[in-house]
Image 1 (cartoon, rainbow, N blue to C red):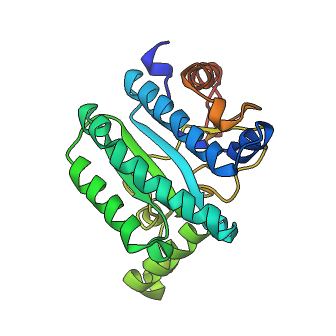
Image 2: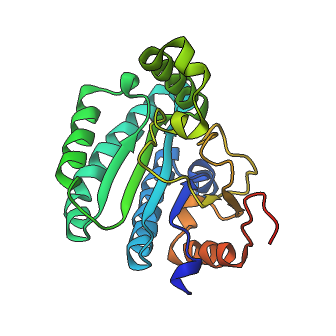
Length: 234
């Protein structure tokens, strides 16, 4: 595939872990564990294909309402994943960034995140973004509050969309060109609401634990066939 037809930023809503586990008579957490293998596979593909940014929706603010045992298992798995993937991330020159509402996160999770971000900050290859305890509405609201506090009422009234971008948690990250959602659900679930205004959507029935390199590259191929006009006429 021609590199000029590749998306600069691919984002993924990873859905279907629970259904994958249930279909096999397993606990839901086993689906999340297998789903981590899909994260690894897609990140490898992004590095190989020289995708500049790969982001994943790992945990939404709404997910805090899940059973406590599942939430605890997910947080433990995130810490374990960060530790286990450290060598792979550094070897492949990957920059790791974690974004979201940190107020709910434990001290242990915050430390694991901060250590990985600091260690990989100088890497210049693919940027891997994990959205953790994130929601699009929260992001827009916190950006509005930050902008109003910094600029004051009068300046806030005259700000442009480009000015507002600077207050989102994705301030230094380009908007996603391609958003993939697995498991057959046709919604974006409060994810990157502002940033996905001109994103191409790709929906697949494949459950996330079964989504690996071939499926990832199939999505890239579909993106390459799209005609992106941004409201203009070509």
